[in-house]
Image 1 (tube, rainbow, N blue to C red):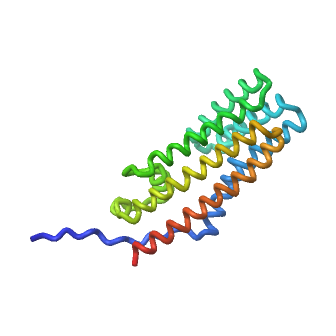
Image 2: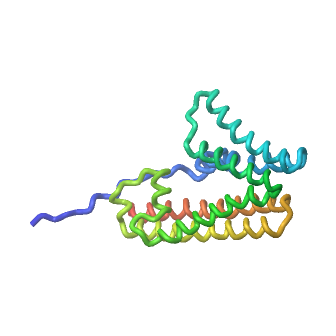
Image 3: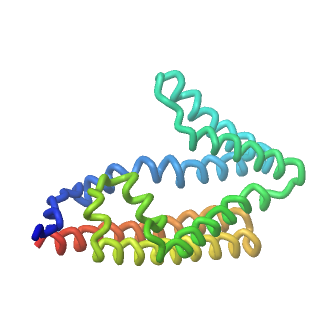
Amino acid sequence: MTLLLSPPVVPIALPRLGAMLRHAAPRVLEGMILPVAVFYAGMVLFGLYGALAVAVAWVYGGIAWRLVKRRPVPGTVMLAAGTITVRAVLAGATGSPVLFFLQPCLGVFCASMGFLCTAKLRRPLAQRLATDLIPLPEHLLEHPRMRRFFMWQSVLWGCAQLLNALLSLWLLLSQPLETYLLVRTAAVAVLLGGAALISVLSLRHCLRALQR
């Protein structure tokens, strides 16, 4: 009788936490902090319409920089450019900055629902995103411990993004725009940074447990 043995778990080395933080820092700066700083500076210097123009110019300037350096322009960047253009036109036409920031809040809410609604599926959203960043063997992904890990990661990120969306929406509708920009940026950085740290440490613990 032939015995079917599970393949051995191959050790997977994750980058050190410091290296991961150094890798993520420029992306956080480019994606979260600088756009808010640019919009805020534009609003202080030129008013609402100037801030909208500066925000759009910032995105297209990033695209132009990549083209000059002959670097590929990711599809997500092109999509972001189209989205911010539509948001700026709507906000400029109505004179309301709320419309400029409302769409990202709704997008974060939809992302939270995506995490929560797929938590118990065979391949939850958290697993799909994680495997885009870290190549994990298929047999490892099918291990019950890893399946539980990704289920709880989906719950973690779903709750974090839901809190992000609710906080952002409350600040947008109840506070001055300056308060929204400053408080929301700081709060979201702490919230998502904490969730990311928990995820990395949990993944390390899970992989070490599998390799014993």
